[in-house]
Length: 158
Image 1 (spheres, helix red, strand yellow):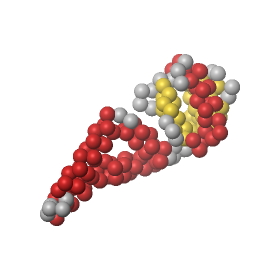
Image 2 (cartoon, rainbow, N blue to C red):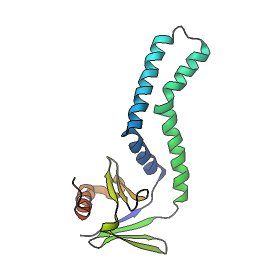
Image 3 (tube, one colour):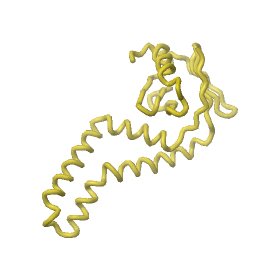
Image 4 (cartoon, rainbow, N blue to C red):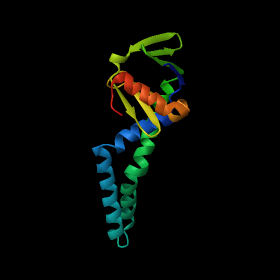
């Protein structure tokens, strides 16, 4: 079997990856608890609070659902600007063939560190901190078939 994708990682892809990582961890639970607690405090104290306290309550409520995602997106935009070239990925029985401009690399299947499937993304890790992000638009109709193929090559349970 052989799969071929041309990938241009966007700020949206990086943002989604970061947000999935944050909100599916203990950090995400902490963020949700903090936000819920701030909403409850606002409901309780808002009517009798002064202007400064009202502003602080509203700001505290906005930290995790609005401000943090916005800051993460701005960081993703900066990271995406550094990724100027399209990456050509070919997956076959020998491994992953990566081409970016004149640079070429072959990654053997036993060197692949992991696979992470999210609702809108599939990430194939070439090291503990680096990987290739394939979004649903790139994968198209063959998303599940490709995921099953990668799982079989990495001996990963689905």
